[in-house]
Length: 331
Image 1 (cartoon, rainbow, N blue to C red):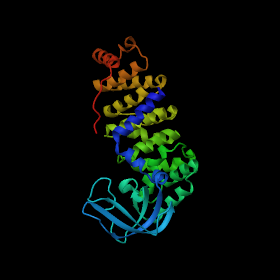
Image 2 (cartoon, rainbow, N blue to C red):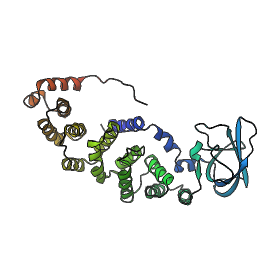
Image 3 (cartoon, rainbow, N blue to C red):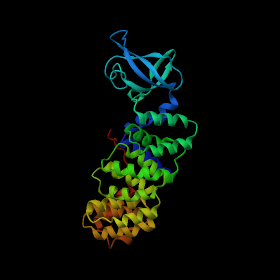
Image 4 (cartoon, one colour):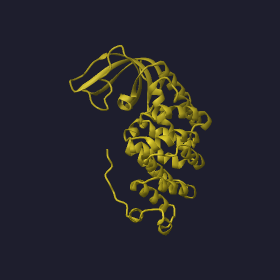
């Protein structure tokens, strides 16, 4: 069951925000580990060899990793297109560059995400990541603290990078920053939510239930409801049940969400609450969801006959035993 839930959670991350995979692959942490050189450089000027190519010359101001000359050039196809990074730069711009070598030639690593404004907080964070490059635990704790950075790139990169590390950060250090980030990102259904929820799940941050249960019950976004529900199911269930009771739904829309959440929780404690939903609703759809949950937790049709309308019970049984159907995932 745990493996099934892990696979479901990973599928939800990709289905809701497929662009995150690309962003996570080009975080500062990942770029540092893949780059042949990391340098702070100033654009000197363009020297395009032909209309098909755009070439910029740079002056090295500070080499953070690897080796480059005092001056060097970068070349890419001309034009404004996805993955091209040089067309936005002009003489005098100072940038933090992540570079790779292909033969004797340097290229930007990670497209436009491999070039960043040389802002003080960003440079400080990059130097700190480099200093901890071989210490995974120290890197994880640094990224956890960076979730509260005043630099947006540093903050967002830290959020995206944390779930990909082999070692999680210290939970006591990471929890305040994680909860602050969730407080900011949940109301706007941010693209950072899958990464934040993955870290919440990994660290078993029970305090997050106070944010996640109301969101799961009331968000207008079904995809966000599914993500928060999957996270809540993976958290310590004593806290999830306690928080759900504090926010017990009083409308059919939230009762429907509660039934979906209870279906994934421990059946012994979920069953009485599903029965409560059946008695509190007059809407067939909500009654159906609660009945399916009860059947899934082991209740027998005979035991439900007195409480559930016959048509609803019959449909719930059919749905419970129906073969799964494949459907296209919305891009």
